[in-house]
Length: 135
Image 1: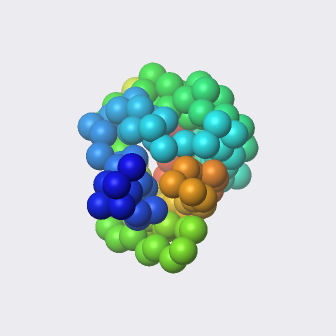
Image 2: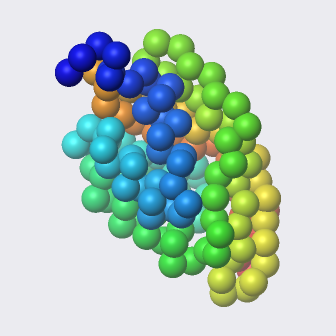
Image 3: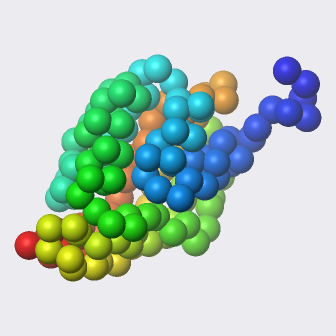
């Protein structure tokens, strides 16, 4: 691979947010994930837990986001990148299909990369408005 074609860690993470839906973002994620990626959804979030491996992440997170929510998205406002970590700061938005209630919640995503592969993801989110939309 030529040096000018190697993606920076920041470019890799930016690419995971380009999809129009949670499924499309999951597809972009698969191109850069380590086989044993560790994905942590915050305590209090509806899909809380740590999932290992991309198939587990897709089953427990992305497929549920697609089936449970309308227009669920994370709008990134800024990125912070340092060596093997990239942080994305922004806002979740969406409408829970079962209640037709919308929400907005501040969130931060912390990504860990090594050798061009995403090794770990950790979510920090104010889950109250998300849970409230589901009730």
